[in-house]
Every structure is written in C-alpha cells, then in structure tokens.
Image 1: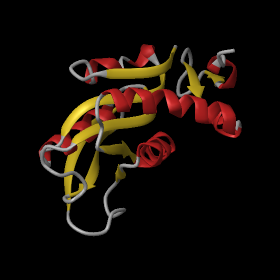
Image 2: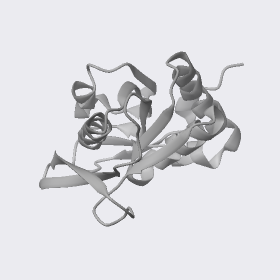
Image 3: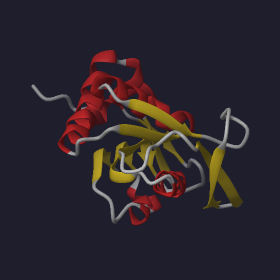
Length: 172
C-alpha cells in the first residue's frame, strides 16, 4: 500500500504572514519509515539522471541531500552562509523580501562536468535554490535536476527552476 505522505506534513496558518498557509516536514522526519520512503523517491529520480554529486542550501538542504547522497554513494556539499565553510569559497547573492543575502560554496565542492542534483526540503520563493544552481554552474558542474519534498506553489519558486529537470514529492 502506498504511503500517503500528506498525512505527515504540518500546516501553519498565517505564517510567515496573514493569509499564507505554510507547510512543514517535521512530522515526516519523526517517522523513519515514511522519511526513508520519501527520500527513496528522490533517489530514484537521481539514479535516472546519473547524479554524481548532491548540493543543498543551508541546513534544510542537508535534510534531503545527505540521505540521498548516502544511498547513491556520492558526495554531498552544502551551500552555506558567509564564514560557515572552511577554505576558499565562491559567492552568489539572492533577493529576500527584506533585502539580499548570499550563499557560499567551496571551490572544490563540484568538479567541472560533474552531474549535480540540487536538493532542499521545500521549494518556496526559490531564492536559495537559484543561488545554489548558479554556484554549481560557476564551478563547471552540470545541474541535471532539482528535488524537493514539498513545493509551496503560492510562492512561485518553480519559476526559478523552470529550466531544470524537477521533482517534488508533494505540491500545495
């Protein structure tokens, strides 16, 4: 019997602002079997694209990227905020509702020509995903897909990843 993943998603009304219904994967993470099944779907997506490396932004990207990378037997590299990565890094800025921020990636994180899957727990505005994709491409990596557990369609993040192969487990 297939798992109804939607039963394992929390909903928060009026977050981050009134009239917005936000979704969160915390209940999914609490159930190991459901979480494994969810990440297995992304593993299947990655296998079809011969992924050689996983890159994910900040802590949320780790939630999906690390288990997928482990199951594939490939590396995982985080795109992080300033001064959170040792060694030489490159930078990409992205817009926020209240200004700009930046993500950084180690210069040796991705090799030229390497097939990369960019992952995150959810796709909302797409700012961090767009910046992560640009970081990978600056290093010569080939983004062969993007994968998420949840897409929050009201935030229009898909517009930022429209040119890339796309996987999402649940869409709201």
